[in-house]
Image (cartoon, rainbow, N blue to C red):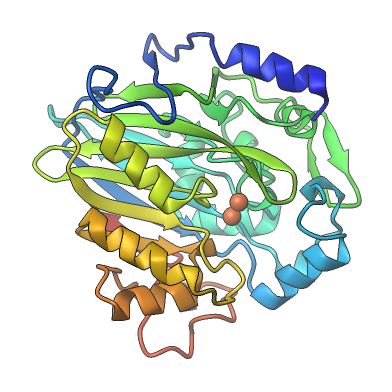
Length: 356
Ligand SMILES: [Fe+2]
Ligand SMILES: [Fe+2]
């Protein structure tokens, strides 16, 4: 990102934003608990369908692509990705409000076009988009596996309201405008997004619906990405659930932030990629994350994607409430190399549903 764009982004982060007249509250990342706590209200329940968590099918191959492209400091827009190894990440979230009304949120729009068309069709997201039944597309971050499948969404619903971090790079912005084609990394979109666009800044909590908020963390991320936002739900009589794409802000940072800053916080659940052992490597500090999460006293953990199968297995052995997935993912036309031989399915995988 050029310095000028960076400064522009920082200036924009101070501005108030609104989607359908909704509110953005300003809260510092390390806000001291007390008067600055944010009241996001409450919802009744949250149902999450894993549309696809398989952004790549073979972790070793993914790691090799990054190595061949110059390493994790190189922009993802400059890496020649192996097209036979890629899929995408996307989740469909149905929120039920206290009065019984509902909203549908799509988090992330995946990567490879034909894979996204396939999983959208399998999960019914295709017809929901075509009938404009999805209320908003929330982009967790700009990474290829979450964002580059944008055309699959826009060709079905061009003016879908969107919420993105305000830290997208010029390439990501061009992709959104339908003016981007990159033959090296193989990413393109010629369908401009025409709907409302909310860009969430680092010190803001975007209150989307009662009990539903988006919190952006302005963090540097591998492959030259910046900023990831999480969905935060405050569910009546249960507590707070966080939903993440990759969780590059760190799962302990996120849960600690929620505990300190959400009014009436009670620990409850988390879902999504947790970016701990993304390439199935083991590091002793991963035990610290398990111990840190144990102290958070969550009731349900639904993890997948870049969490790392090795971490999820160990976390379950050490007593964290890691939910087991079904074998539905095996019915999909392509299955990941990690998992099928394991004793237990420690991921919520493609086609799985969790009700919070
Ligand atoms: Fe990811
Ligand atoms: Fe990511």
